[in-house]
Length: 263
Image 1 (tube, one colour):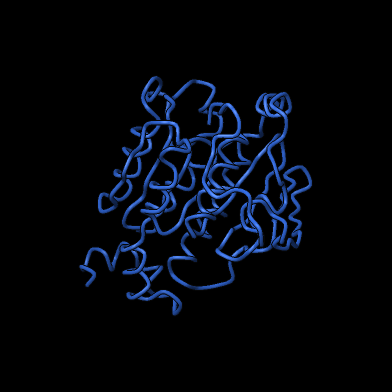
Image 2: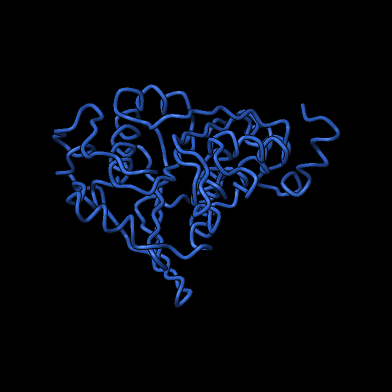
């Protein structure tokens, strides 16, 4: 049962026919894992906390740097030098003390990723390196966990939701790029407001999934061009030859394919 204060806090949710008190209770019972507490993870963390998602996991090994503040809105100037997961947890708790935040101040690698994603209902890829994205995709597909992929570069972003049985990240990109390409991308820059757009869409997918409402972004890659302010939807299909979700998978356990770059 919701308390009187909770009915006031979540009033704009509860008045939606598709949500109501029962839907808000589902959000309170939900568990969402966010991998990355940077540009994408910042709006995701704040909106999930505001929405009343009961348990939110945040994983990131890094500390807050001055160059982060141009886009990573969950971190403030006074947080410089602090672990990102602690900085994020503090802001989320200040926004909504009812939310339980579980922090993981380490780089998510193959030896732990399967156990970690299995303890949550929905996973959000808020990383910014290819090694982590392929590892997360494989772990979630193998564990049967739904997750939201998000990616940003310069002025462009993309996102899609992967559900059991739908097209996965490897159906589009079978293998990571060469390390030289990955390093070049990590140094290409990003428009500060861009992760706010993509991260908010990822949070939307998590909330919709927990509520069981609407149509998720499965089998569709949503591409965003901030310079022209245009969205483009690209239909994608599950690839029967996909190495992880295909008919004859060759990837049966998560593996660290590349030396991870900073998330």
